[in-house]
Length: 295
Image (cartoon, rainbow, N blue to C red; front, side, top):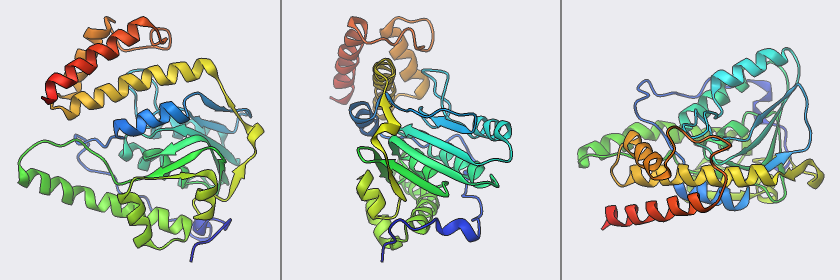
């Protein structure tokens, strides 16, 4: 039986830390299709409220090569130390990113001794959905989304390598399913099916299924048009990078190829990702490149 609007089940006994991989050479990603959906539905969504006890996560999870930003456990730890012994609000609008970094951020938030309220402003997908589960109270916009899926990586090798990678990922998927099940009250088998299907939940569905406690009022959310344009442009670079990696390139090779086509001497910044003719030319060039690689 699903629990609706119930307080978090963790309140009486905080769970132990989720597992982190000992070998960080293997990274977990958010699929490019999710990044594209974020660009369509949630780019530029921001919170109206500001305060010195609010942590904003309007970025990818993990260090972001293209902007120099990203949400990391180290940064969140620093913010929590600055807030001190007080309640905390965490505002989320993120397509996800590195699932392992998301688990680390979740663990950091769970160690905070005071109440944590999570507010999903636009999207909490993939690794960001794990972070959202750290809230004692979770609120979500009616037009916002929470997305859960299995850990997603890019791997290369023979069938033995693939089997080894699948076995290596299994405990992480299991740990995520346990967190979602404990938070929502839904049956674990049902959670696993939702993860297998890469399930998007609207605000009302997330509340109905126990992944959130309540809907946010509409006036708590705004759309910053400048941030929206920047988000979408940078997300195109991120999605292209993943597509090139999926075609067989290393991340270093993919980034070098994109930088070469874009014509910038270094990683993109807020100033050089403004949408325009250059970005359209870049997308056309990369689309042609990907078509050639997949033929």
